[in-house]
Image (cartoon, rainbow, N blue to C red):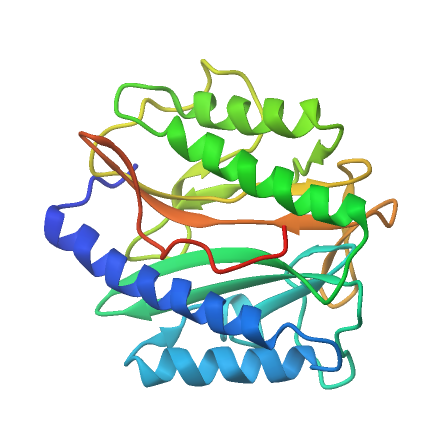
Length: 255
């Protein structure tokens, strides 16, 4: 069952989501050549804890870190490491969750590390724009499929592909709740949206094909063909007046 949140619940989700947005802004400032993915994770965790919250991801189904830090062909769930430093020309997707007062917030952003190739710049720009277009469709009375189809159409018209093996989700008391929020599909598919629903919309977009695989660590998801991938995510409340982004406006990006 899809939860319909009260105004108080939405405010609690917003409080967690704002921490996420600020943590992503901090992570973006850390995304420089020579900085390790572990250093980014440590900065994110320290910030979340300082806000009186807990990192949603740490320990979730055994995940060992507070942030997912995914470089280039890693789509999602990259495990931070002291052995992996960012390099000029990389793109890095950072996914963060925060839990406070019984509710979660979730968000992700992809950052350019120094100067990046034109295709990578366009990938980030298209993925971010697809997220914004999808959010604009999240209105009461519309089918969830309108969000999904809008994202897919925007991505494919740009010549990129949408990852189909991974989807967005509802969010609230649990990090992942119904409904699933695909980034592809028909406009008449999925449940009818209603005021009070809160969902995490998160297109994951590849420059190459849509196929992905999971490494032996059972977390790291990579593109099958080695192409680069970008990931942008906002926690969004559906209100009578339309969609409301609960995570802070996305941090600065070179995209």
